[in-house]
Length: 299
Image (tube, rainbow, N blue to C red):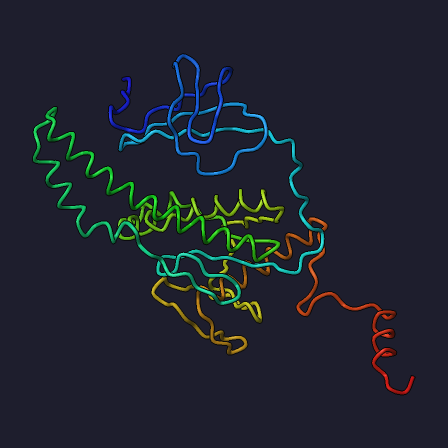
């Protein structure tokens, strides 16, 4: 049977080329006379190729403008000194191999404070009435506010990771399978793991950084990052454990991030890239001798 589109869902994008233009506060598209007022939030450069219009559930229109600037993308470096591994979680949305933890703001949970009241008011309205349309718009704005806050948080976090490092390694997750857990499905959806890794990936490509996604079957949480001892089982409620092999005390998430970094470095080296050992690149004999000669008071 055919599946009809919802009337108030996000409308299909309108892609247009040809007689299009953009100014400081307007755009023009074919089959519409005059200029359309718009908020151009960044300086444009290059040749305008297309404009794609989209309407959201709250009735807002967005125009995505495609430009061709003929600039070559930056070449990723061959020698990597700053490599970081990132593990994702629920209590902390991102944990990197340096031990830094980014707390999960839980935007959907914060929106749940007044969202049930708005949804209850919507369910009481008569279908097809104007009051129901107003109530639907109120609920849609609440969801949009949470989604925009989550996107802003992820954009800032992903940009920080890309700016501070030359290579970012993450772990591939089967989020669809994890959403089958009815106890954690809402929390996993609120964390937005897939959208976070997607933002890191395209920002890394645009900035000339390396982005590596590891195999999902790597036991990063229950493998000791120091000696490599692997536990048989490690339940989710255990957040810290002590290695039976070397006696090292591990934080579950930080240990996973360290293993992700180690496996990512191995993958980078296998692809022909040079990742120096901790401590940086070794100095040459000539540079060391010159430094000693210049600092020696006897010569």
